[in-house]
Structure formats: structure tokens, C-alpha cells
Image (cartoon, each protein chain N blue to C red):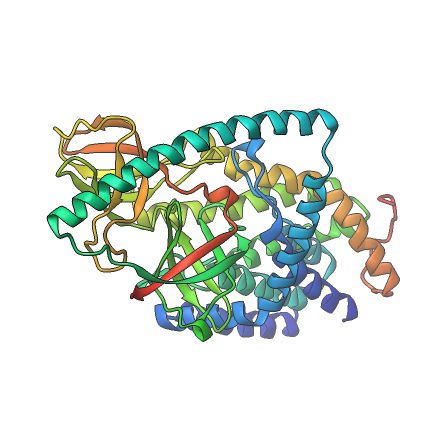
Length: 180
Length: 267
């Protein structure tokens, strides 16, 4: 349970930190997202109910800090990010047996893909609301770039979280410690 | 699936349904509460970021300092020339005002604010400022700098507010172009690839034929933005099937923005 609360605090901290990370101008202004990496690690390491709790917390926080309310119109309703996080974290949770066996490669790749999936879903929703479908090179970079960055960051962040889990004597750790 | 997981899923579904049922006003209130709760973290983070940036920019090589010195000398000469020209213009304006008995140009009530955070999301262009309800800030108030229009407030909590930037596609501003009778709606681009995003001035007449360098100002239509605020400079013009569209470079460099003013009314 302590590890679950540590993950919640980390999600809160990184969500705030993301506001101070400038976009990467050499990657068509792609943003760096760290929260999804933590959430997807939680999806592998936590049991199902706690995984849902983490997805709920991260989704509420993301929506509360980013959703646009203009006049009487909410662009993407509060709650959509919760659903997105829960579905994608559910997929990651399904790969848990691999994680238990100490295999991490697929999860690192999936973390990147799922991060991009969140941004793509947001883009599709705003496109549906605003009309006129645009898929330029910039759009693809802004969707793919954060996923690529998340994929690259995932091994380091996973290793740090793994270390934290051991330090807090978290019981659901991989049987093999091939990653370390 | 275990019984605990099913119960967790049901509870999760109920909470999700609760959030999805929020209307715009409830969402705004909830958002304002979250921002208010996190305001101390944002303010501390912003202070830390400024300190780090000042240390980083303070460390310059001798070569950089020499280059900067040369550039400043050039700027100084240019500014002197501009200053002289402005003095002449000021004299002429005063003379014309007096002659035509023009009313003194109305001045806005401005509340100074600092940028606390920049947008962390890919698709929305917003910043947060360190002013809120306690400073009499309300939703839909224009935000400006001495250079021109920045955007408008959307979510306002007690001490912090979210500003929707003029470069966001959702920030629509009624505009007119200097020296013409052309009126249109300015909106940001959905996806900006570069550091300096452009603005679209839509719904112009096909015969508008705007030239690069012409300036667009707020027309005052719509009630949110008062007339006469500088929005941007025309970069290009093209005709579409039904209307004309101009690309504008924003008047304000939003990537370097640090201090802004919220327009709360007229004096």
C-alpha cells in the first residue's frame, strides 16, 4: 500500500513538473509526458483495483489541469482521460505475467505506444468537436514524439520505480531481476 | 476475475460516470479548485524555474558578451533614430487631436500579472497567471501586454487563473485590418510546428488583397475584447472558395512572455 501512495505522489509531482518542461522545438514542439510512464509502470506492478485507482487519480488530474472550458462549452468532458488511462493501463496489466517473469522490453515499447495513443485520442476528440481533419507532419510528430520520448525514458523510470518498490518492501515484484 | 476486482470496477465506473456528467460550470468550478489547491506548487516551481534560467543565461562566454555588446550598440543607434521619429509623430498627433477636437483616447484599467506556468498539453495553448478572483479577475477578461493582445481568461480561481492564448484555435477574436474596411475572425492554428505559431484571419472578402505588413486590431465586436488592441501583422493573404484568409504573425512573442496585464474595464 505504501508503494501505491508513493506512486500517487509521484504522479502529482510529475504532473506539476510537466508544466515547467518546455516543448521540444527540434521535434515540432512535441511535449514530454512522464506521468503516463509512471501510470503504466503502476499498471504492471499493482493489483487490478489499485491500478484502477491510479488511473483514476492520473486521469482526474490531467483533465482538471488541461481541459478547456470556453463559455458554456467543455471541449473534452472531464472523465475521458480517466477512461483512456484505465483502458490502456488495463492492456498493460494484461502483460503482467511477462513483468512478473522479469521481462521489460515489451512494456517499454507499449508505454511509448500508449502515451502516443492518449495524445492521438485527444486529437481525434478535438478534431471531432472542431471539424476539418488535419493530419500534417507536425501532427504526427506531436503525437509520435512524446511516445518516442516515453519509450526512451521508460527503462530508466521503471528501474527507479523498481528500486523504490524494493526499498518499500513491495510484495508484488518480479521473480527474476534480470532488469537490474 | 475476483470479487474485489469486480467491486473495484463497479466503483470505478460509478466515479467515472459522475465525472462524465459534469456540465461546463461544474467543470470550471472543479478545475478552479484543483488549480487553487496546486497554486503553491506552481508558484514555487515558477520561482525555481526563473532562478535556474537566470543562472543559466548569466553564464556567458567572452565571445557571446562581445557579440551582445555589438548588437546592443546597434540597437541603441536604432532606438535613438526611432525615438526621434516618434517625437515627430507625437507632435503631429497632438496637433491633429487638438485641431479635430478628438476625445482623449480611452485607457483601460489594467491588473499586472506574472506567468506562473506554460501549457503542458499538446493541443491547447494556455498559460496560468498569478492573479485570480481576489484581484477581481473574472472569466473572459482580455489579457494584454504593451505589445498587443495575449488572450483571455477562462478558468479563474482565488489566486490563479488560466489564460487561453490568442494562438489557440478556440480563442476567436473579431478583428479589423488597418487602412481597410475588412473585418474577420482571428483564431490560432490547431497545430503549430514552430516556436512562433501563426494566426489565421478568416472570413475576409475575396477582394481584400491584404499586403504583408498591414496590422490587424481587435474590432470590439463580440464584447470580450475592446476595440483597438493590436493582434498581429499580416504575413500573407490567399483567397479560398468562399472567402479570403490572411496569415498573421502575433504581435506578442508568446514563447518569451513573462509579465502580462489583465484588462478589467475602462478608467
